[in-house]
Image (cartoon, rainbow, N blue to C red; front, side, top):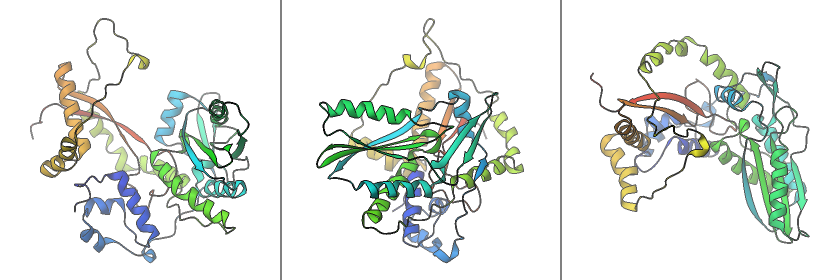
Length: 363
């Protein structure tokens, strides 16, 4: 089977890379795209000896990435801009083991030890601490609460708002004990240090670290691939390279005729809060066609199919020749030699403008 024809995508390819690494097989996302069938990929897979050791995290000041710069331009030094997950806990957790596990994860992933400092001119800087000194875990006993759900909400919001870009910490974990054999585990991380792919790495490392700590063993976690700090530094160098700066003229040319103007009825309310969501569901047969049959027949990914439909719809409605779309990506593309981000925690999201013509262009 072709990986992408049966529903595979670039994010899932990162999980394949990470799990293959644990099995001693070394493949890259680029190789999966080039050889999407197992028989092809097996010929390219290397052993552990063929991969250089992962670089060490870089302490001190490191460059802001483009998505981080965009955050500070739009949000300033907003401390409460988090991603969070609330987990249901069956039984009782060993608090000491949990604390050791969390400390080990923070020590392993350098993005969780970041600090940000804003100057008077709002020129923000990013620093990496060698070690996180402030406690991350807090245990809250709600067993005697008359309304534990309300108490959980109140205490959870307090933990969420305790994140601080300058003073630290960027991650807080709350273990809420609500009964003798039940609890909740809240993980809150500032968006500057985490994204959707990062949570998958975190959910692999934290249970593994806890199991080892509960057994009284030394915590040994898998290699993190390229640390966040090393990636941020390499990305800044890459952005200033002739390869990238030489593309600027092409981007300007492609966007020269782009227009983001859309028709409004009357004065129109353009505030974000005035928007609304319209949902629809596709049946199983239509979904299968979209995910498997259409990409196979037209050699297009599902996102390209949906973008084509979106562009044609907007163009027909607006009377324009196309649509200007901000495309968002997970940002872990294989663009820099010697970089592996399959097991790295951080905010890697990319955002870039693309003008999509509504009709095929000549030539």
